[in-house]
Length: 146
View 1 (spheres, rainbow, N blue to C red):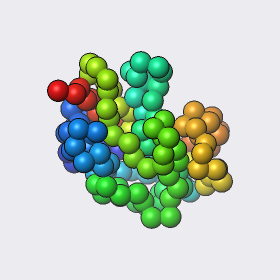
View 2: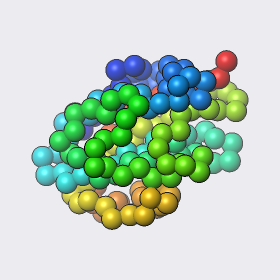
View 3: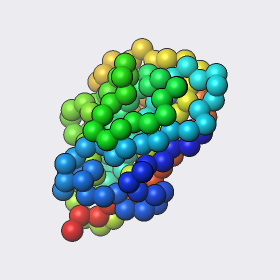
View 4: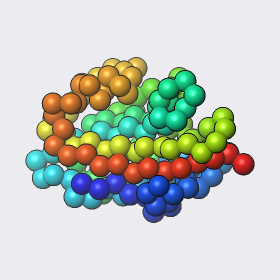
């Protein structure tokens, strides 16, 4: 399974448009090679370089396994967006206080769907899905404020 973006390559800079310095909308994502037996996908975007520990920028679950892309500034139809560490649901773009941070776009293919409250934390989602993961993929983007 693979996750890519049409606007930045793995371990390269995320364009400012997709950060707090721009439009703060999610970048377009392309998803490929999802296992045929997957029932749903989960996407977690986080920053392990945040000063207070890993900072969650987006959680989305119950994404259709048939999806091929998540367009810019959108959430997949019939999926669920959870809370970010910014205290709201939806995408919250990179906004590092200093230095270059890494942003992990982690995609999980599951053999089930999830029945979770939208207030659930990303760490709890990852624990919840541990035994149901069929495949994983990740894309890492970098960002440094000017």
